[in-house]
Amino acid sequence: MSPADSIADVEHLENLLSEPSDGLIAAMKRLPGDILILGAGGKMGPTLARMARRAADAAGTPRRVIAVSRFSDSALPQTLRLWGIEVVGADLLDERQLAGLPDAPNVVFMAGMKFGSTGREALTWAMNTYLPAAVARRYRASRIAVFSTGNVYGLCPVSRGGSVETDPPAPTGEYAMSCLGRERMFEYFSECCGTPVSIIRLNYACEMRYGVLVDLCTRVRDGRPVDLSMGFFNVIWQADASAMALQTLACAASPPLVVNITGPELLRTAEVCRQFGTLLGTQPVFTGREAPDAIISNAARARELFGMPRVSAQQLMLWVADWVRRGCPLLGKPTHFEVRNGRF
Image (cartoon, rainbow, N blue to C red; front, side, top):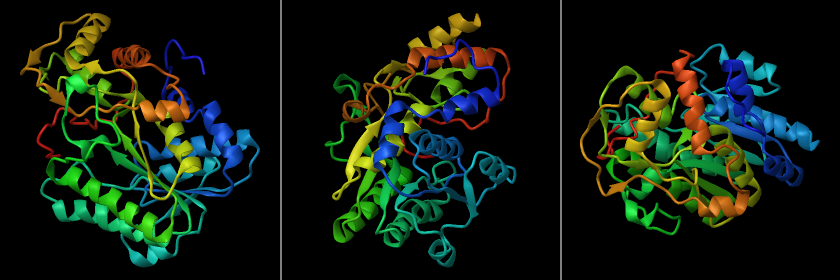
């Protein structure tokens, strides 16, 4: 894929977000069987499902791609069907509905709760820890790729360049702790049932309608202060994150493969905002001071397995600035990446 100079509209964006990488197409040739995506109705799920469909077709390996969600967006199921994806509406916390889902040799687990977790801690633990145990038991005969988060590491000294997979987790706050609980449940069932599992510690996927870069760009555009206390971060183009996540199905293992997925660049919040200011013709406003640590990850293992991301952070910044400047649609869902106390 050669990056476009500008992303024209939502249709163009969703086509780019679902474009499979060469590595994913090759993995599909080695990986037999249907793909079941649990929690497919979120920000990342629909285009990941479409990418799985496109990759399977490009690989010449006929299979079903099945998207499961409560589908709070009533228009999404029809869109997924038009993309060649089967749709199953289900509440995964309902034991009968979970038991009634189709069997599949390949499962992608995307369900979870982050925003609104403060004040609803019980539901957060149910979604992030109880449900993973139930899914791991239900699909113990499958390969499972599990979406997790770099938040399980806690804050990492910037001088280290990012947390690595062998670092002991040190989650801050109930959201991050419950996400570590998610990992432990899949780890337990992987070890006792021999289930091949991959655990994907992602931070942060970005596209034009949401993500850390969108948060910063819109703040700069609107003249709102940017808090510098979370002074560094990583991002990855959502399509690259989806392609790598799907490829982990082919290298899932017992005990689980743990892999950080993010871009290679360590981005400085202040510098990114200054670049957005130049691109938008405005001056960023800052508050706070850089802390010596941040939620940052080292994704060298992912690059060894899957290669470099197709889109650089610099290209993402140019795309985001162009999209925001033209007033194109945004999701209005801030990432709150600047949160340092774990309360989301």
